[in-house]
Image (cartoon, rainbow, N blue to C red):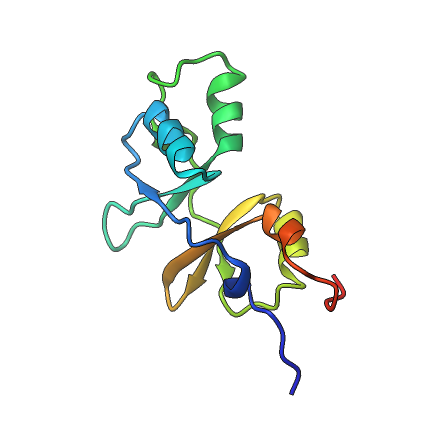
Length: 133
């Protein structure tokens, strides 16, 4: 039986949540403090879906339109629902999947829970010599 690295094997454990009503300033400060490129937006209730806010969202939704970080709430520029990656997906498929869906960072999901984050830098720092991507 062939063994392979799974998405969860390379996922960062830097997974942080924020309320959708928070200001983008608060989100940007949290991203800087935790050295992350994205935050997961907390669900309002069990029937809700999580959202995600990324550095790209802040650039497109606040910086380019020349708004201030304080006048925009996270929920206004977040992406919802979150595009997530199965924890057991072979990592050789992850970069193409992310590229095809125009996603640069995504949470890794196992048993309905987010367990980590993957972004393109993981593929630069992971030894993929034995994998044909």
